Length: 187
Image (tube, rainbow, N blue to C red; front, side, top):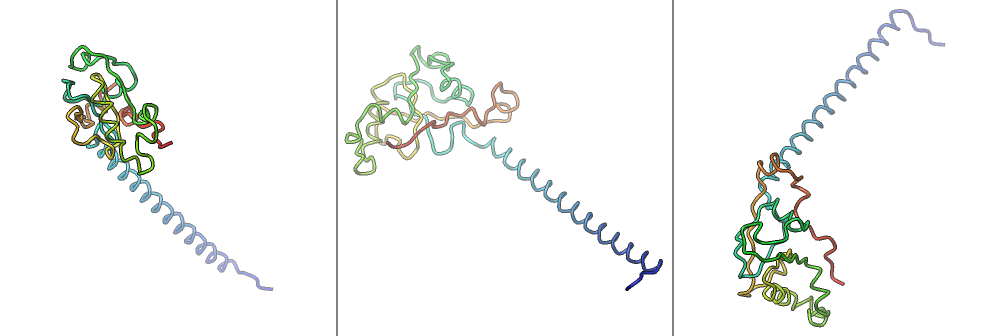
């Protein structure tokens, strides 16, 4: 049987200690690098928030062309879609009730045949334009791909960008305050 001497035991212990020390150093370095990468990523994403539009990317707000409101801030948009603001007068427009219209509501107004369901909803944009043009107080939240083109009764409402003042000084949590489609799907 192999028997270790006192000197051999010290050497073996020193080797084990060096290996453990090296493993802890490498582990600490990896942890530090990971935390730094997470912090850099979060700050990069956070600063990107201030460049983002008040309306979710890929969507737009449309109003009737007679509406005098030219733009809405993020907080105004949230309040309108939460039904806390119910009159255009409250956001600088004329005294007229706001009628919120979400994309999926078009399917309650028109049949699949009227929307052209057989041909990828070829009449959907046209029908959305009709609804907006016929409804003076409407604010419609629509996917950009279905925006009514060449309809004089429809105007796309410019939304402001989210600013640091909106984020830090506002009363609402802005990233979740933008109106989002709740169940926009084709039947």
